[in-house]
Amino acid sequence: MTSVLKVINPGLYCCVQDLGRFGQNHLGLTTGGCHDPYAFKVANALVGNPINSPALELTLGGFRAEVLAPITIALTGPNVGFTINNKSQVLWQSIQVARGDVIEIATPHIDLRHTLAISGGIKAQSHFTSVSTVMREGLGCKVEANSLIKQQAPRFTKQKRLPANLIPNYCQNSPLNMVLALQHHEFSTVDINRFLSSSYTITGQSDRMGYRIQGAALESPTGARFSEGINLGAIQVPADGQPIVLLNDRQTIGGYPKLGSVTALDCANLLQKRAGDEVAFNAISIEKAQNLNHLAQVKLQRALDALN
Amino acid sequence: MSNPSYRIFDASENAVIVYFSDIVSSEQTQKIAAFSHALKTSLGELIVDVTISYTSALVTYQSLTIDHFSIKQKIKSVLTQLNDTAFLVKQIELPAYYHSEVGADINAIAKAKNLTVTDIIKYHSEQIYSVFAIGFAPGFAFLGEVNPILATPRLATPRKKVAKGSIAIADRQTAVYPAASPGGWNLIGNCPVSLFDAANTPPLPFNIGDSVKFIPIERNEFIRLGGHID
Image (cartoon, rainbow over all chains, first blue to last red; front, top):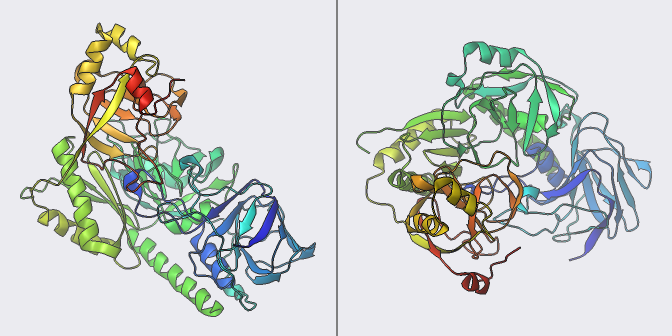
């Protein structure tokens, strides 16, 4: 297959992702997968791909690549300096690029992550039904300087642009929705209220596996417990009382008590935050969380329809 | 299950966790494995993933297709129909070279317990272990239970690197490190057979609920099977 991009600078961390590696937990393999399914699916739709086509996830921008063959690209995520041959470009739209063009994505000021899709999808080795990159498990592909990005199949698409009202608002800093679940009944009411009324600072020990946050310490329920499966967003509280929110690349099982779970929608928002940022949590019912998922699905469908 | 001892809790807006009895046993592990199998078979596309471990099964479901009340009803119905007929399990044998040159802690354990290395080999290899959980790393299987005579707490400071294939003990659990990784378990030997290989189908020789027996081998056999001594 044709190489379509030569990466000059991958930035802090650039990897290939799809929607995730599902149904493989029994082997000890985690889900992985794109940080923000909405941004990921829309990026693919913009370049005319099936929505689960492999695309690049960029962390903290700083990306520069030379185009080796004519393709269509689309960048989604929070606003960031984005140029082709030094000419400013808009996110959330498809752009035709030609051989010799230079794509450059600056370092974002506030948010962390972007999705870069190319027409035809990126050719990547699939392991256990997915191309998702999970470095700890040695699966997937981390993009380095001089990496050549290959296209899965040639594909051409007309110019598309997502209507502005369907572009997420990344600037808002509302509390992260979570549901009280799992072992929440083992925590004291005082501690649950403390958790919900405090703001926590994201520490430097935060990555796609989990975000460690620092603030009001919680009393972690003691007592022997067996390791159990860990779901996306689980908020575990180790003995030091400082919560850890487990994310896409989390380990499959673990033994710390958990007071609940950040909703999948807000895990995507959390993954845009960086060390030093503050977060707060808002407890919602499971019914409300499921309703929000349905609304998000409607919004996604509107976006896909608009781009079809 | 005439006398249901399980409890179901929400884990998130798209996952529930089912706890079986609090006692870990190979029978229970087999029952949980059978439950996971039955769930995937009868609920099909509604189930995204099932993560089973020791006493529980975390079930991730398609929350856009089914709400949390209905999925719990369906899970209860699968639990009720789960009969007591034994789930088909297999026993696999793993070659084990027990020696201080590949098991840095075997002499210390022997000394602490007033045993000989030969005793340790006997106690560790005569037991049939059940695969209670797989996790921590791809293919890392938590096997139990070790003869209480050999139970040894985790190291106070984990090693930065444990060699691939290392056979280790932590409390009453034993395991084989499927790849080189950091680790805090006590090393007693090495298994030259690759346990997790992404290129193999299946990538792992066992499932949760299966049983494992270690077969002691000599140094030359270990080398012949592809074992390395660093």
